[in-house]
Each structure stands twice: as structure tokens, then as C-alpha cells.
Image (cartoon, rainbow, N blue to C red; front, side, top):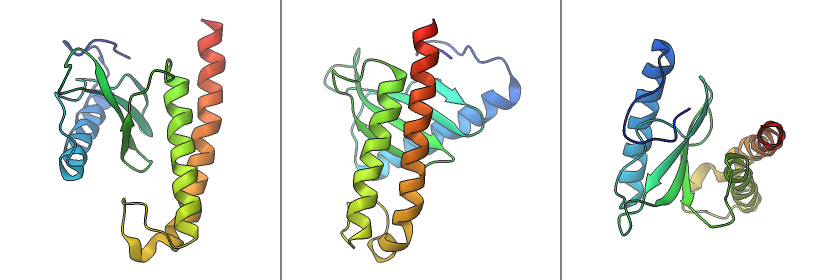
Length: 149
């Protein structure tokens, strides 16, 4: 997985096609959310084909910096501000898990979180909770792999 936004490094054709499709999904999502940015990374900073891709989104104010992290795949497409405490891929995955868990709890109470359709929040809350828990587990697996390197 590439750290560079300058050139494509994925050589597997299926992976590359899926990545290109996911990038379009993220770009469209960010546009609909009104997120002004300086571009989505050419390739995900981390991915698990065909389930999950984690994208760096450049800050419009400081294009050399990651301003947001976006996620796509067989998960809710979402984004969050890049924070200093998010130092590794595992940190970012865990942060999405925490964000989704908070959203699931609010949705289960019938509260609208600003994302998704408010009329089906109570139905979607348990599904989001499962995704949040899966994201936490994946973050722990990735953290273990990172510590082995």
C-alpha cells in the first residue's frame, strides 16, 4: 500500500480497479458532504481488498498535510478530521470504530447524527454498532502487525 500520492503502486488489476472505484465513491461522498479539500490520495494508505480502504484527504489550507481520513468499502463511507493522536493506521481504524459506536448509540435513541437518513436511524443503529465493533477488532489486529514490523 502506497504512502505516495504521486504514483500508482498497486499492480494487481482487480485491486487497482476496485481502488479506482472506491476513490470515486470517496470523492463523490466528500463533495456531497461539503468537505472542501485539496484531493484524495491516489491510492488508499491502507486497504483490505475488497472490503475496506482508508484514504488520506489533503487539507485545502495546507495541501502537504492530511486534513481528513476517509473510509470506504463494505463499511459506511465516512470521513473524520485528521488529529495528531492518529499516528498509525490502527489509530485511524480505531477512531472510526469509536465514532461509529457513538453514532450508533445516538441513533438507537432516535437522534439524527447528521449522516444517513433520520427516518431509519433506529433500524440502522444495530448494523452500525456491528461495523464499529468489527473496526475495533481490525484496529487491534493491525496494531499487532504494526508492532511486529
